Image (cartoon, rainbow, N blue to C red; front, side):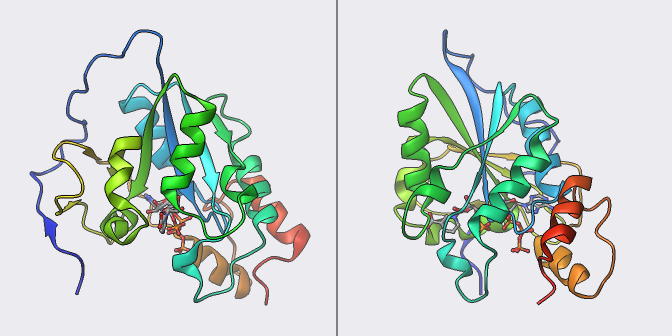
Length: 220
Ligand SMILES: Nc1ncnc2c1ncn2[C@@H]1O[C@H](COP(=O)(O)OP(=O)(O)OP(=O)(O)O)[C@@H](O)[C@H]1O
Ligand SMILES: O=C(O)c1ccc[n+]([C@@H]2O[C@H](COP(=O)([O-])O)[C@@H](O)[C@H]2O)c1
């Protein structure tokens, strides 16, 4: 039984118009994830949000200790960080932050966004989540504070319904929904393919294929 969700009108592919850009303020997307490994679904989602929301930059933030994934072994943070750097290197608007990797203890988005706001006091933040992660957001630490720290952008993901979690803790209008090109790729599937000696070419960037092979990741 999932969390209660409010159905949204059909997506048009274009986000609702945003207020005009505040003078002197940059718009920065924040793409958090465990990225084990980072794949083209993450990159396409970030690219589409950047275009539709006129973002100056998207910061990818690999998790340090993803507490809701503690049921399985997660690869060392340095591998996930390096793969994210490799995957984003060719895009001048994509950067990678170590805030979650370097903060000890479980990773909470409320800390991620607080740290980024301290680092970028003049920026408006847009936190990007896929439909599956958005549906879980009310289970996150201090979920009611997230909308105070950033605009929240939920994007479509094949196999998941996109909806604003129904709750008084996320103020009306604080979550934007956006249709992005559908890529039915998951990190779980990529890991399983490597384990079975199947190719992950074109599911993840070439450099990530090579990093996985060079370090023997996901081969148990
Ligand atoms: N194919 C995709 N399309 C859109 N969003 C995605 C896609 N894959 C992941 N995301 C989103 O990217 C963020 C980070 O995802 P994450 O690193 O957990 O990847 P994942 O593929 O879901 O991993 P896993 O299969 O290990 O759970 C989440 O907000 C997730 O919803
Ligand atoms: O703040 C929380 O409690 C929380 C719980 C689960 C996930 N998140 C965030 O959601 C993003 C996607 O996480 P994941 O585990 O699906 O890769 C990432 O930025 C995580 O830090 C955050």
